[in-house]
Image 1 (cartoon, rainbow, N blue to C red):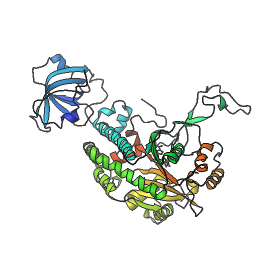
Image 2 (tube, rainbow, N blue to C red):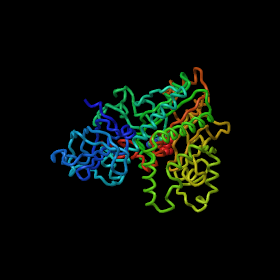
Image 3 (cartoon, helix red, strand yellow):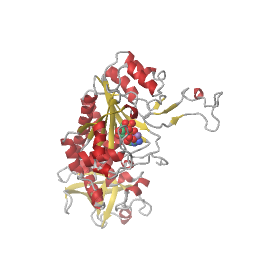
Image 4 (cartoon, rainbow, N blue to C red):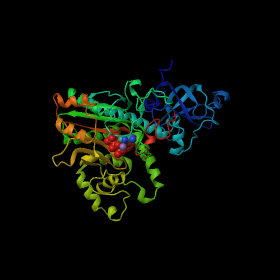
Amino acid sequence: MFNKRVKIKELLTWNPSGQEVTVMGWVRTFRNNQFIALNDGSTNTNLQIVVTLGQFDDEILKRITTSASLKVTGTVIPSQGKGQKLELKASAVEILGDSDPEKYPLQPKKHSLEFLREKAHLRFRTNTFGSIFRVRHSIAFAIHKFFHEKGFLYLHTPIITASDAEGAGEMFRVSTLPFDNPPRNDDGSINFREDFFGKSTNLTVSGQLEGELGATAFGDIYTFGPTFRAENSNTTRHLAEFWMVEPEMAFSDLEDNMNLAEEFIKYIIGFVMENNREDLEFLANRLAEEEKQLPADKRTDMPLLEKLEFVLNNNFERITYTEAIDILLQSPAYKKKKFQYEVKWGIDMQSEHERYLVEKHFKKPVIVTNYPKDIKAFYMRQNDDGKTVAAMDILAPGIGEIVGGSQREERMEKLEARMKEMHIPVDELWWYLDTRRFGTVPHAGFGLGFERMVLFVTGMGNIRDVIAFPRTPKSAEF
Ligand code: ATP
Ligand code: MN
């Protein structure tokens, strides 16, 4: 029977008074044939287990190696040594699984993140990844809690989609047609009527269009699921498979949208600060150590916990796209030709521009609104100036874009006209346009990149380190 075990995180809160318990976990270290540091993944703090000299066979002791799995029964006593309040005095040690120390890929020493990416199947057993993934779990939980408490309905939108109209990025095709000899039309093009779904299908880039169908019935909905982009952007901020959170609210405008997004981000941060203190402190120290290796001008201004505290306690800056461009044009960086990409009204801001605004100019998260319509999607609400749309992106220090959203165009004629201008197939999206035909309402929503939020909260620098098994160009191991 296994479920009588006590988790180490729980055990460490006890008052040691000779309680008999059973724990299970993996050996981190074994010192002097006497002290086992056992970890069970519930916390980074190992449980010290003391085996009295001469009590166990040498045959057993030899098998207590790094990453071997153990079942240990014993009594909880105040620790004799420094560094821990309590320890477990073992009365029985059972080896559940041996681990050959010669072959085990991780050593009880510091490994680089790059090395651990190649051992992603085992990296959960390190302190860094233990903390990251417990925080990731907490953020996911906080997201559901936040929306549930606000009366939002969790809607599961499809992963396979036949609409490629959203234009959010390159898509992965889903097909069962034979590669070598696909059925063809008379003109030589591939005949997708013969494909599994009877039409051309892809993995979704966003659940938004379906989300709008939900919002125009339930009022407030959110989606939270996997999203795919076949874009070949090998950056520290892009994955081919990532998770996105997309709330959609009926009876809402751009300002409601910004308010919700800001409250949402602060709620997540507050939740993790309250519930994952130990892991955040570990990650803050890790980051501080890493920054010491960097030249002074590459370091971030604030330690992790201060940064989170600061974001929690300050309003996000809100500026229009036009103001953002003006700030960039006035900036010393622009005048000294520090930007690689051109700056002028109409550009899709590059990450260097976004990071200048948040990290150098405002030094806090910034919400940029009212972008030029030509660089944004067809469904965004057209402003009266004829040039801009009611879009809003949230830019975060160290990350760049973390949220992209908008008020949606609820006026049928305007929406149809814009779709035609942008060559979006109006008849294919008949079901989407029905929301505007039958009881249309002002509505708005946004998408938050889940991994970018995890990056922000954990202070990690590469998005491959905050998802369990990253999928990126030329890489789908594990
Ligand atoms: P970016 O300009 O950074 O590529 P985007 O404009 O393509 O972002 P949206 O289509 O608005 O992004 O998607 C909504 C959110 O999803 C973004 O704000 C970002 O947080 C996240 N996101 C977008 N693409 C990726 C990706 N390839 N990997 C991880 N997260 C992503
Ligand atoms: Mn993109």
